[in-house]
Amino acid sequence: MDVLDFPLSRLCYAAHSEDAAEVERSGLEAWLGGQLDGKNAGSPDLEPRLRSFQLQIKYAAGNGSPAPNGETRNWPAMDEMRPLGYVSAPIDAAWALLDPKTVRPNEEYQRPYHEVAAATVIRAVHARAQVYERVVAFWHDHFNVLGSDDRRVVCALPSYDRDAIRPHALGNFRELLEATAASPAMLLYLSNANSRAGGDNENYGRELLELHTLGRDAYLNDRYDRWRDVPGAAEGSPAGYIDEDVYEAARAFTGWTVESGQRIDAATELPRTGRFTYIEGWHDGYQKRVLATELPSYAPPMADGRKVLDLAAFHPATARFVCLKLCRAFVSDRPPQSLVENAAKVWTENAKKPDQIAAVVKHIVLSKEFAASRGAKPRTPLALVASFARVTGIDLAPTMPLMNQLAQCGQKLFGWPTPDGRPTGADYYLTPEYLRERWVLLARLAANAWNTGQPKALVAVEGGPQRAGDAVERWLRRFAGQGAAAAPFLAALGMDPAQPLTDEKRAAQIAGLCAAAPQFQIT
Image 1 (cartoon, helix red, strand yellow):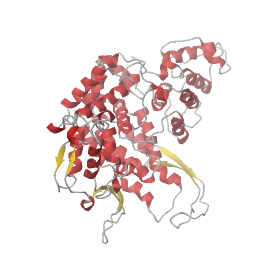
Image 2 (cartoon, one colour):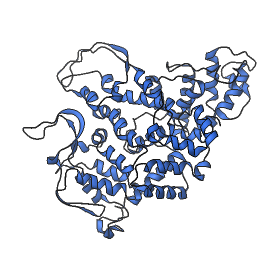
Image 3 (cartoon, rainbow, N blue to C red):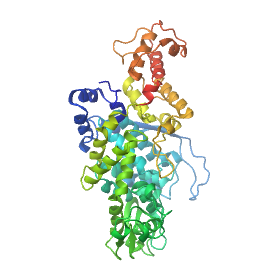
Image 4 (cartoon, helix red, strand yellow):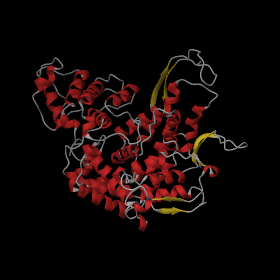
C-alpha cells in the first residue's frame, strides 16, 4: 500500500511508510487501534522537534506615540528566531502579556496564537498518531474559539489546545465538554467570564445547546414556547430545547469565570493569572429548570453547571448531532443515515466509558460506508501541505508566510470568526478562488519560496528521473495514481519531455505542478 492510497489519504494528514506497511501487513483495524490509543499521540521525535523549533518574530521600532494606558509605544526593532515557549508553558506565562502597565507591539500579543498554529503544522507533518491529530482538529472546529483576535483569547489558546482539547480528544465526551466549558478561552470567547446573577450572558448557554450538544435540529422554539409542551418533557425526556432552556442554562453557569484582576468586592481583587475560577457570590443560586429537569436552589459550587453538562451530553439528540458531524468529517458531506444511526448507538452504549470517542471513530472508519467513500472529501489545505511535504521529503518548518497562505486557501488555523466552526464540505474548499490559492500553495512550497524547506524531488522517486518527461510520469503516478502525457505539464515550465533533469529546483517545480492533479486534491 502506498502512503497516499485510500484509506490512509483520508485518515492522515501525512501518512508514513511505516503506516502503509502496517496496514498492508496487519490490516486497517490493527493499525487504527494503535492510532486511537491516546498514549500514542506523539512520535519519538515529535516533542524534541517542537522544543527545538524556532519561529521568527519581527516588528519595527516603536514610534513613541501614546498608548491608551498612558505609556508610550517605545520599543526597539525586533527580528529574531524564538522557540515555541507558550505552547508548553502554563497559561500564566502568556497572560503576563496583558499586564496593563506595559504596552507591547501587536506581534508580541499575537505570539501565543502564532506558536499554536506553527505547532499544529509540525504535528500534522510529523506526528505518528495521525488519526488523533485529525480528531483534535475536528474538536477544535466543533468547540470553535476565535484564537487570533481578542488578546485574552489569544493568550488562552495554548492552554485550550493543550489542556482542554488534546487530553480528551479520543476520550469521554462529557469530560471533554466540561474541559471546554471551564476553559478560559471558551469563557472569554463566549463572554461567560462576565456572566453573573442578575446579569447573566446567554452566549455560552445557547451555543452549548445549539452547537456543542443537541444541535440546531433539536431547537423547538418555533413550535413550543413552554417547556411543558415539548414532547417528552412531562416524562423528563424532552425531544429538544427551547429558549427557556437557554436562559436557564445561562443562569446555571453564572460564576464560572477567569482570574483577570477583576474586583469581587471592596476588599478583594482576583489575581491576574488567566486561570479558571468559580466565584460563589456571582452565581445565581435560585431554582432552575433545564431540559425539563429541576435544579434545586443553593446547590453546591458549580453543581448547576455540571448538571446542565450532564443533561446536554447524555441527551439522545447530542448523540445524533455529533455523530452526524463525525460522519461528515470522515466519510462524506452527506453520509448514509444508517451509518449515523449506528454511530449514535455506539456513542450511547459507550457514554460513560473513558474511550467513548475512540470507539465511535473506530466504528465509522471500519464501516462499509467509509470503505465505499473514496473520492468524497477534499484535502484540507493543511493536509495538502503535510502530504506534499511527506511525499517530496521536505523537512517542513512552518513560517508565517506559509500560515498566511493557508488562510488564503480557506483554512486560517484557529481563525474562524463565528462559534459554528470552519465548514468541512467540498463546496467550501473547491471554489475557483480557493482552488487557485491551493495551486499557489503547492507551487511555492515546491520552490521553497517561504523558507519552509527544500523538496528532495530528484531522490524522492525510485531511481531519480533523468528526463523531465520521466519526472512527470513518476510524480503523477505518485500524486494521482496514474500517468499522463508529460508535454502539457512541461509546457507550463518551458521544458521539453526529453530535456535532462539534473537541477533540484526544476525537479521540485515539476512535483508542485503534478500535485495540482485532482486525484491528489480529493481523497
